[in-house]
Amino acid sequence: MHGVSRLVNLRVLALNNNGILQIEGLKDLIYLKVLKLAGNNIKSIEHLNHNMHIEHLDLSNNQISFIADISYLKSLKHLNLERNRIMDLRQCDRYLPPALEHLGLAHNNIQDLNEICHLVHLSKLDSFSIQGNPCVSLAGKDKLGFDYRPFVLNWIMSVKSIDGFIVSAIESLKAEWLYSQGKGRHFHEGQHRELCEYLAATCPLTADALETEEQRKLRLLDNDSCF
Image (spheres, rainbow, N blue to C red):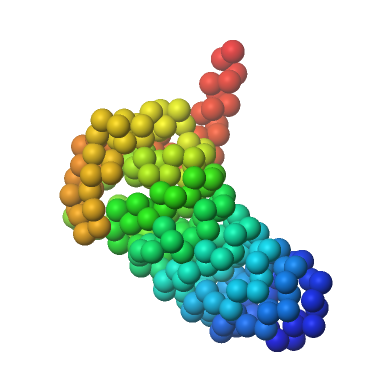
């Protein structure tokens, strides 16, 4: 990556799918706003202390196993960490900048859904992805089926889209109930099984929760045609 170090006025840098092992050589790119490094072999988020104007950071499909402290990226709005090896979200309440509007965590290795509590400070988050993680997977004999979307909303109430699906009014009401009347914030890390049992009882899977995005669009179109 040192080959771009002289392009000091660069605003957008895309180096996807290049076998890059670490983030480096960007110290002088102080005007950089968009950095795309998807599909490489990067193991940690580092050396971005001088790139204070980054708004869009795509590190999807890499080898990242933990979220480092990037709270200094005050302008960061879009962070894509999908398809990495992240196992937990501890310290994210301090490590992730509160200006984030999109956070992609789909297809990682997060085991405990209670880890979502560390994202409660992201009051501007508009879209979020968590699908494909063990904590929401239905595969396996001992897995309990439940709709995790209201639970996510119970912690991050600003979110309008989860895993590519728009949040419905019913889901928002369920989230409000979990927060105010239920036990939405009652469980702690290490109590994933207990949380699953609770959600299986209070937020069971329905046909709406299982339908595909295309099916949902078609259903909404059919409803609109009735008026």
